[in-house]
Structures are given as C-alpha cells and as structure tokens.
Amino acid sequence: MLDKNRITDVFFDLDHTLWDFEKNSALTFEKIFMELNIDLQLEDFLRVYDGINHHYWKLYRENKISQKELRHQRLIQSFQAIDYAFDPQNIDSISDQYLLHLSTFSNLFEGAISLLQELQNQYNLHVLTNGFELVQHHKIKNSGLSSYFRNIFTAEKVGYKKPHPFIFEYAMEQSNSEAHKSLMIGDSLEADILGALGVGMQAIHFNSHNEPLHDFCPVVKNLKEIRAML
Image 1 (cartoon, rainbow, N blue to C red):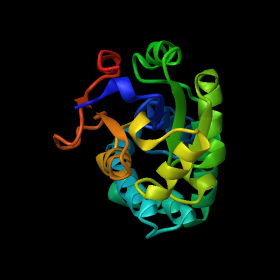
Image 2: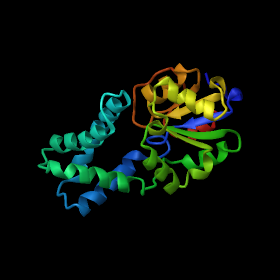
Image 3: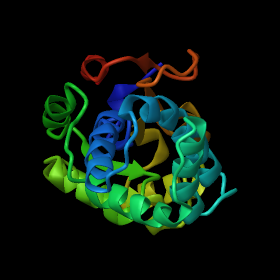
C-alpha cells in the first residue's frame, strides 16, 4: 500500500513511462529507412523489433553485452527475423542515424505533462533512466520536460544500471532524499519496481507494455491513475 504522506521525492523512468518509445522509435525508423533507401515494410520490421529490442536491453542491463552490441544486434536480429538481406557494413550507419534522430521526436504518453505539472508543486521530481546519457538529455529537452526535473540520472553517467541498488542509492543521495521518502515510477517490473523496492523505496508500476500482473506495488495502465494516488 502506498504511503503518500511520507513521499518527498518522485523518480521517473523515461522511456515507456513518460516518453512514448514505441511511437517515437517507429517514426525514427520510418525517417532513416527513407533517407538510407532501405526498401522494406516498416510494419514487418517493427513487429519483430520491439520484442528483440526489449530482449537486448535486458541483456545490456545485466551487463551481458556492451552498448555497441546492444545497438548493433537489435538491428541485425530484426533484419534477419524478417528475412531482409542487409549489408552488415551499413549497421554502424543505421545505428548512428537511429540514435541521432530518435531524440528529435517528442511524443509523450497521454497525461504526462499534466501529471508533472501537478506533482511538481508537491514533490521534488527526478529522472532515473537506463538510457544513454546524451540521448536521454536530448529527449527530455526536445519533449519540453526539462523544467519539471531537479535531476536527471542516467545509468551511463552513474556507472550502474537499474535494478542495481547503487543507482537508486546514488540518486537518492544526490537528491538529499531517503528511501522511505522516495517513490519510483516506471514501466519495468524487474528494473524499476523490484530494484526500487529492494532498496526500501516505494513504487508505482506504469504497466505500459502488458507485463504480468503482480501485487508488489500499485499497478496502473495510464498516467492519469497516478495522480489519484498522490
């Protein structure tokens, strides 16, 4: 059960929580496939890419692959899954163009801005993300989110990825907060929710991609539900 009266600081994940990764990613691939003359059905590619991307991000946060392997293998495996003949020499270019353009798109989940507007008057707000440092800062700036957050903590900058306890503890220390006063809101049960609960934080699971239901913490399907809890 959430104890809102103790909360002073709220930490948000970014991708799949505030920033609509799937929508922005689809627009990015549409743009670069056109620019690089990659002739394939975008819908076919996206159908396999989302799951493959989640899989490789899991390997990355478990330190089983490098950032470069994440960036390359999610593309290679997606092309192979739809039997698209690609030139391996182009993977670097596609990966670079993807990261270059991804943060230029600014679609947020419905209710993101209104939620932040209401919460910022009551709590200290921060971002705690496993995403890449430069890309995440660009996403936040281009989406008009910068003014809402006191701190932006990325795994790349901190040196540890969620759900490792260090990144949560570091973020709280730098924010002058304590675990029992801190709330984590994120989309990943493993990385955000269990990671936060493991260090004594409270949590709300924004289940944006239909993870299995659980009773570790409150689970919501849209951001509007969160305001009623705080």
